[in-house]
Length: 141
Image (cartoon, rainbow, N blue to C red; front, side, top):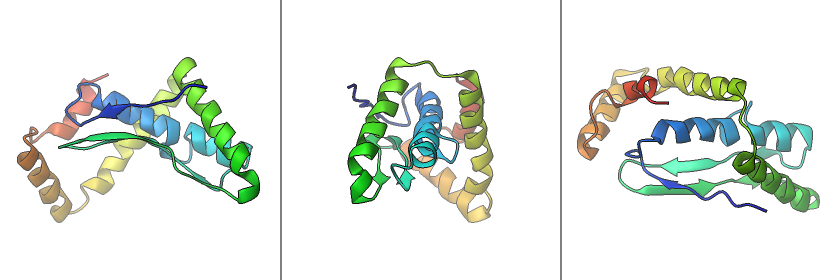
């Protein structure tokens, strides 16, 4: 069994690649964890995960799952299987496209009010990031 352990910050040059991996693996309704653990095996009623990243400190890998006591072992086994597949397997281009599109589409909700735009710009300034930090997603990976 392989363990997926990554530690990263938003300053990592691979930040957006990690964000795409997060979305693909455990970020949304089309993620591997959701589809394979919740929908196909029904081993967990909630599941997600990925690498936490922050502006000022490293985040770590996390994979929370909610399940019934009768399906706990099956859920853990399914989670480990998905981690192994992510580490040793092949990622399909359609998975990357869906994950990237989901991230790009979510930006509208992060900047849909003047208050949110100002708060985000203040964070960039406080932590020393360029004002156009979100735009760099189209220039990486």
